[in-house]
Length: 86
Image 1: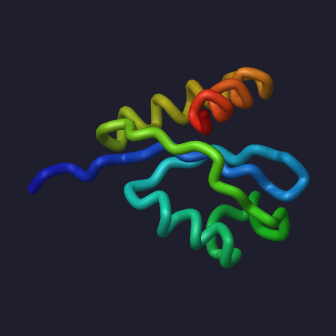
Image 2: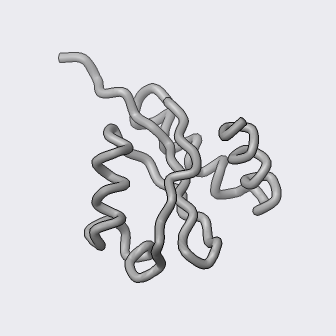
Image 3: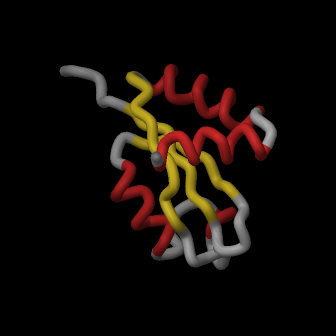
């Protein structure tokens, strides 16, 4: 059995807050956030926009990358998002 490919994603909430998470299915996880069944943090913070996703390899790689992204200053996260959207 092969290990699933994991992704890191960033969601922009309605008031501009950024939420970072990991998953094996970004679209399904984003839909869960939008329907209020995702993380508690994103509930009631809509509208939500998926602004970044990155393939990370395995679960451990994704967790490591999530910690790296969460440790970044907001302006660095915004630069990452801007580069992704170009």
